[in-house]
View 1 (cartoon, rainbow, N blue to C red):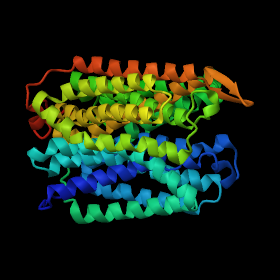
View 2 (view 1 turned 60 degrees about the horizontal axis):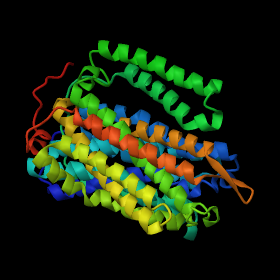
View 3 (view 1 turned 120 degrees about the vertical axis):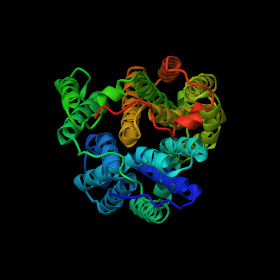
View 4 (view 1 turned 135 degrees about the vertical axis):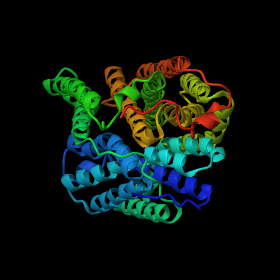
Length: 480
């Protein structure tokens, strides 16, 4: 087991862990500029090539709760280092790939790195003084959005000017650098609990998530009423029920469902699904409007690189508002920050509806929406850690990250259905119509408002508790 010998500077710890989160999140958008070229590069069909994106999502979702639990059992720094190994290995495999199977394997390995974000958030609770904790958690939590927003223009820039393999050699070098920085600058963190990994629970949750996310992400391709899609979604429901039965009877559950059912944890996780939905829907819609040909009458005709650059400031806004969110949580409690975040996201959607025909307008609307996401993402870990024992912080934060991932997956499916049903013909091509994008923006706005409404019924906390509670031991005992 690890033993903490922390003499490191808090600034160095926060910087390294935030950078680790950004690098892990970069892996999600790394191959987006390559999507159109992948079928030729890998000698396969477009449907098969899409697995290079889907597999990263699936592996990340399945591995994150398991990695979180292992972090509680064996020390978070140890697991952070362990996560960098598949990031490096997966990047190298992708860089050398000449066909579909190695690419999918490499992208799956890269997906394992997503567990670094909730691990890093939980490690901050162990390593930082109370005065630094709020802003550090907010920055670390927003790293998922920052990496995703910055990954697209960076990847497009590399693909347009260098070999596509340079993308993966670059990600391998970044991942190796993160491993070295963690080793040098992040102190060891003690294991927070005794016990063992719930292998049956891990397999059960993994199987349920694969069925659910596969059905949701591939439903549009296979048909929402096809036997495959309906079978996967039905299997997900059955497996989840059986998994819940097992977890409630396990002495060392992967996810303590009694803790997860506490009002604060449950409502925060529900809000997280909705915020994840709203975050991803905005980026999907705005990126497409930017790139659709101007001949449609509403598209802005930007290249992939230009569209990515227009969107990049929104990622930086998430970083910029993290300290503001921390101060708001300290003064009014993280509940208030989450409510404000949801309402600001809704405001961003409203602005996007008003300025759809302007690149500058969409950039500003995206920045407004991302400000809301930054506030909301910064508040969620504090709300979760306020309500769970310290021995379960990594597992609980990992489960919360999983909820966000489910929100983004459902978002992609819903927006995909809307845009595929509301189309127009331009130059012999079928493209989403302007009304389809407007409906998608209205849906995103409604979801953000619903997230704020759910946050309203979270338990109230006294002013200043946001600063204290993130590092204090909760009064509620673990049910292990």
